[in-house]
Structures are given as C-alpha cells and as structure tokens.
Length: 550
Image 1 (spheres, helix red, strand yellow):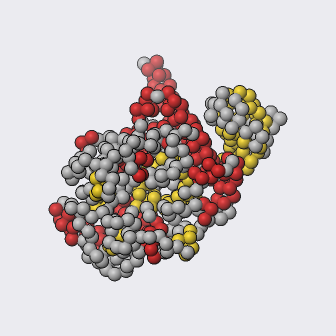
Image 2: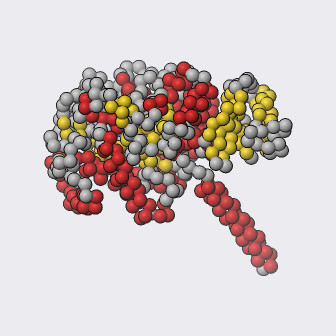
Image 3: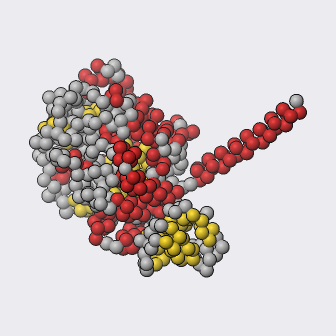
C-alpha cells in the first residue's frame, strides 16, 4: 500500500512537471511575435494542391473535355487541412496560407480559343454566399481555420469585387444595374482601366454606383430552391440597417465577403484586380472587414490569436516597391495604401534578383520599408499563378529562389511547388495554365534532388518563421568579402545570416550583436558555436549560415 501511494506521488510530480513544461512551451509559442510585415505566406490554387475528398470532384455536370489544365483537378479544402495536420506547412515555416477563391463558380464553361475552361481557379463567381462543392463545405472551412489556428497558421481567402463570372448557357448575365458588359478595358487611362470589362465576357460590377438595386433574379431563384432565401434577405436587411450603406452592388458583395470573417474567423483577404475598381471602394471594404473582425473577436474571445488587425493585401497588377505608396494609373497617382491596404503585392522582386547583387536587393528593400513604407508592407514573390515571366520558369535555380525570397525584407509569398521545383512548363498548356499544374507530391516522395530542395526551403522557412526580424527587422551589412554576411534586428529578435560563403570552415564576425562567450546556434547546419574574439567559426558542408542565440 505504501509503495502504491509512493508511485502515485511520483506520478503526480511527473504530471505536474509535464504540465508545467507544456505550459512553458505554450507560453513561448504565444510570446513569439507574429507580424504580417515579416510573415511567410503560402499561396496555393485550392483546386491544384491536394485532393482530400474524391467524392466532390465533379459537380454541376462540369464534364466537358477542357483545354490543357483548364478544368477541375480535384484539389479541395480537406486536402489543405490534411497537409496542415501532417505538419507540411509547419516544416516549411509557413505561418499563413492564401488560397484562391472558394465561392461557388459558374456552372458552365467558356471557350476563348484555348479549349473549354471551367472556373477551377475560383475567380469566376456565380454566388458569393456559397462555397463551391468542388472545393468543399462550410464544415470543411470551419475545420480548416480551426486546425490552421491550432498550428499557428493564419488563413487568407481571396476577394473578388470587380467582376462576376463569364456568361454561359448555364450562367445568365447579371442585371444591367449591377454590371456593364462593355467596353473592354484598353488600359490607356484611369477610366479605361476602371469603368470597363477586364476582358470580353467578364461582366464588370458597377462599383462606382450608389443606386439601390434589387437582388438578381437568378440569385433569388437559386436561394429559394436551396431553401435559404428568407434567411439571406433577413441578413441583408440587418446589414444595410446597421451600416447605413445604400443598397448598391458593391455593398451587397462586401456583406457577403465579410460573412466569411464573422462566421469562420479568417484572418485576412488577398484582394483581386484592385486597380480596376475605384480606390474608395477599398477604403469602404477595409471598414467593413475591420468591423466584421471586431464582431468575430467579441463573439469568440477564446479563438483570438493575437492583437493583429485584419490583414488586407491588394493585387495592383504591375505595382512595384519602387512606386512607393502611389501607383501611376493612366496618368493619375493613386494611393491604395491610404486607409485601405496594409500591403500590396510587389511585382518587382523577380527583376531585382535577376539584375542586382544580393546586398543591393537587401539594402534597397530595407531602406524603403523602413522609410516610405513605415507601418505598411509589400508581399514579395518570385513565382505566381498569372505571371508568365517568373524569376526561374525553368526551375534551374530553386536554391537561389528560396534564399532570395525568404531572406529579402518584406512579407514572402511561396507559390505552391516553389519548394519542390514543380514544373512550370507544361506541354500543350496555353497561357497561365502552364503555371497551374497539380502539386508534384510524387516528386517529393520519390526524387532525392526534390527532397534536398525541399529541405533547403524548410530550413530557411522555419528560420524566418521563428524570427520576425528576418522579414520585418532592420538590415545591416557586416561584410561582403568571401560571401555576404548581414544582421537583422527587430526588438529583442537578433540574427546574423551568411550566404555564398565557402564550404568547410567559415569565420563570421558577430560582435555587432553577440558578446564573447555567448553560445549561438547555426540553424542551417544544426550546430552550436561559441563567440570568441568577436567571431564564430562554423564548420559545415554548406555555403549558408543562419545564426541565432541559443
């Protein structure tokens, strides 16, 4: 009996220690600063990443033979959740996922000379209030957000306010007080970029209008058939009463998009075709997103991750960091940051990396982000879904792609398959379809070189995720002799990085940040070194060093 009591006593001690240890880990995790300006965002096409549920692969009789990579391929929300659970994103150092739109797409297909195309990409909206069954269900989205947040990963959806989907035999045009169907944009002036259709047969929402409009008859009929017409109308009444907005087209869409914030707790929106809509629309959208996020946090205090605001990043096509906060749109200077976007997608980095030395790239971005952009940011990428001139289309420089994308100041956007050198040149694929093949999971499983590339991305990504100073800290060059060594500092977060160094013994100056006798960890080679005479010596087979305080 005494022995039993003793063992129970010991068990209770170990249990307490284990709980204390878990609490310590939880506290450390909670204390690690997350800032959007230094985030590592993974951008994926929902339909092309991972098929978690084959039962939803065909809906609405979307069964016509399509052009190469122009149809649905099975990727869905469950597939993304599955990879979060497996730790794929955590190992890659990803702390936010941006997925292409998941709203219900047009049921028909178009044929613009490249074969039949369906709305697999998510940008051809039929109904903003429904999730397309090819992508999953509301329950799937709730699980995705919950599992992502549990793993410290934020979720960005993709917002389209500029246009509906194309008109097909199954998808009638929206009423004329909602959309214009001509002229097609010529992009030679502000008006010819904003008050026009992006391309033929892509009806343009009249976002400039303040005139009250009725619901499109096709939505009324659809909602009645689905048994939710009364509920949707009731919610619209409440929205317009609360906000005082006119029943203009843009405000209906804003209501429908912000419902994803209050219902699911998403953390941000990437906003599509920003420059094709009046800039005041985005200021209004920000107000509604902020209000919805506040409602969500009030109603779900236990689910609040941190004090960060709702994140809005805009796609102003061809905007570059060199533009500063103002973009020249047909001779007019537009500030899309002003009371609207926290960040804009930067279309310039691919050219910088091709044309400039690493030190010049880092210095340029550090200088701009710490002056003109103070309080705002840019989202850097080297590959994307609709940029036909990525940094490395042939996938000949996957290591450099990772090094430059993940170490350049600003927010980083990893395009799905960057980390596995997914092929971007697909035979018989026309236009941007070649950029949108299915994720190459088989290569990751079976090819040794792909696994080495992935490991490089994982090390850099984890280091970046662990140190917000990498993307959002102050950059200082230490030396560019025999390679490049620099530091980044944000508050108490201090790191030193060396790239293009010699393999074998590497002597690195660190006294600017670390004292003699301090123990440092080289995250890349996983070894401990001690500061002596203001330097550390790292002996590794790599030409890259990632130093952090142990």
